[in-house]
Image 1 (cartoon, helix red, strand yellow):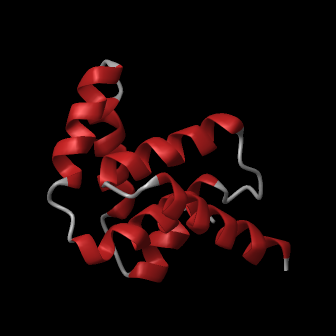
Image 2 (tube, helix red, strand yellow; image 1 turned 180 degrees about the horizontal axis):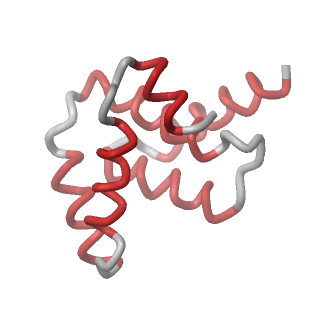
Length: 102
């Protein structure tokens, strides 16, 4: 699903511009700087929304119906940054894979 289609579905008129600005903001960061930025942002996330955010990121990673090893590794890094334990993250991953197989 293209970014513009996602924006239309979510009624977020500025999503494309916002995504492009975020990408530009992190493009030249070192791994440590990016981790700090993500960790700081994760602290502001409502705990009740963390699972949904992780699941949404996973859906976006797999929107081409393929998850590369690097994407799966990034998924577990993001889970850790959000404070979601590995076993729970595996459950979210398994649920999406099973859903896609149906």
